[in-house]
Image (cartoon, rainbow, N blue to C red; front, side):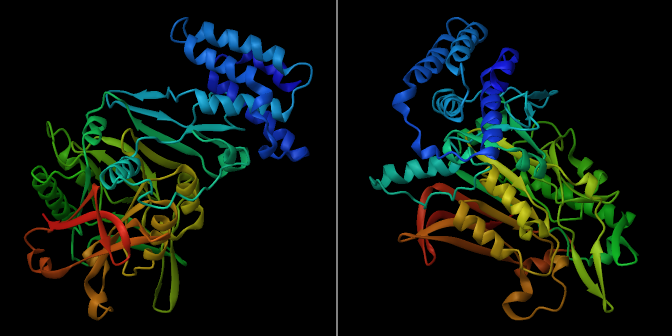
Length: 487
C-alpha cells in the first residue's frame, strides 16, 4: 500500500525511481529476493510504458508524459505491490531514461551543486548517475580503434555496490540509507556551457603541474600548538605567509604558458591571503583548475579548489588526522569531526569524477570506500609527509578501480632522516595498467633533484603529461603514455 499511497505525490521520474527503490529496500529487510530470477518477458508492458514516456516527453512535455506513465503504473501496481513489480520500474528507468541533472546553479560560476537526482526520500534513497564519456572510456575507444582490437586496454573497474539494488542496474547508482548516513555527499558539476567542459572535451591528454612549494622546515612556517596529546596550527607566521604568497603568484604566472590542467600544491601551506594573490586576474588560459593544497584553520584542514582566477569551485575537509611522535610522546592532529563530515566530488562532463583526499585520507579505509562507491576517475592528494606509506593505497585504487592517483608533497616535509634513493623522493603518480590478463599499475615517482639549488629564487614544478590517446608498454604492463618535464 505504501507505494500506491505515495505515488500521487510524485511528479518526476527520479522521485518515482526513488519511491520504488525505497519500497524494495523495506521489503528486502523482511525477505530476500533473487534479482537474477527476474523475467523481462513478464514485464513488456512496463518497458513499453517507460519507453513511451521517454519519447513523448519531447512531444507532449515532461509533465503530461509523466502523468500518463504514473496513471499506468497505479493500475499496474494494484492489487498488490511486490518487489518484482517495483524492480521492473527501476530496471527500465535505468535502461531507458537518460540522466538529466537539475541542481542548484551556483551564481555566475556555471557550476551545479547536487547530492542526488531525486528530491523526495533523500534520507532513504540517493540516485546518482554513473559518469559516461570519461577520459578512461575515450582512451579505451581510441585504443580499440587504433589496434583494431576487441580487447580492452584495462581490466574492468571492480564493482563496489552502494546497496543490494545498486548491483542490479547499469546507468545509475542507488544508495541505501546506511550509505547515505555514512557519506553525506555533495557533487559539484560544471554546466555544459562552461569553458572547462569545452576544454576537456577537446583534450586527448591531462597535464598535471605539481609544486613542492618550499624547502623551509614546517616549524619555520607554521605556529604549531600542543594540547595534551593533540596538536593544532594556530596560524602561519607572517614572514612565511608573505614569502609563500609571492611564490604562489610566481608559480601561477609561469603556468599561463604551460598548458596545465591541474595545478597542485602540498598540504597545510596555504591561507586565504595566499590564494587571494591570483583572484580577478582576468582571462587565464592555464591552469584550468588549482588544487590549493590545504588551509589549516579553526580545527579544519581544508583543501580549496579554484579556477585559474582563484574563484572557489568547491572545498574538501580532511578526514584522517596525522599522528607523529615527539620526545617520546605521540601527538594527533586535532580536527573538529563535526566540521569534517561532508564528502565532495567534482564532475566534469567528458572527463569524469575528480576527488580530493588530504595526506593520510589515502590510507583511511572509509575514505577509500567512498571513492570506490562514487567511481572516482582521478584522485588528487595534497600531502605533507616524510613517509611514502600512501603509495600502496594509491596503487590499489589504480589497479582495482582504474583510478589515477596524484600525490603532491612539499620538499620541506622530507626531513633529513632518509638515505639513498629515498632521500629526495617527494611524491608520485599511479595509473591503471594491464599485464597480459592481470591487473597492474604504473608508478612514477618524482624527486627533489637539482631544483633544490634554485629554491631560494623560485620553486621548480614537476609536470606529468598523460596522453590517454597513446599507450605504451611499461615493465609493469600497458598503460597510457606519460611524459615528464619541469616548469
